[in-house]
Image (cartoon, rainbow, N blue to C red; front, side, top):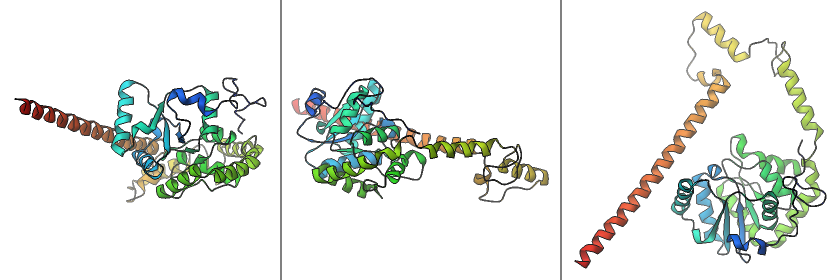
Length: 305
């Protein structure tokens, strides 16, 4: 059950300010050139995987007029790290505008004025996608295995417009470039989306589905799937039986029997360790670069001598 983020008067529901009157000229002071093609991604940096940043470099290679507009990190150290990651991916930072948090009405205007909006992966947008679609933004998305990357695809499925749903990174790049470079394509997509946009809001089926699910969960006589049960879930009953029978779980069954919360925590910890490892590698690469610069300086001093 989603509510519109734009009032009937054309203002943001978050800050009450109008935005339809804003033009690209109103954003030039932020370093956003009005005469370039805007590729916008206002997802926070933690959602931008290195694979996504590699794709940003490819966008610049494929489109000489491309200008990337990205959400910046908080804090000087984090901002420096984000820039090092982008440079390492091959992104031309002279063609990038990094922005902190902006007023909501100006954010809506940026979606409206951009040539294309890039949904980050493997973690993408949810509310941000709905906001962009509502004001005419065109969001290219690449759904992956987990929920965090599948919201935008779900909205497009509801709308019956799946042109902007990519199948892999190469397809994502192809769609983004095509949309950004072709005003006719953008116009046709916006018309189709606008004609069906009401399907995303105030859907009573969503409320009814949640009600049905919660009633099943609350029912002490059945499990969520309708099978007989009680206070304990199926996996707890299974573990209890195995404990009584002193049976060891079969190979490969442990993950299926593991409690959902513990299973999620384990996967989260693995992702956290991978991210920390990537961060350490970036710092090490940066240190190596700095040492190389120092060596060059020493060589210069020797030449002077």
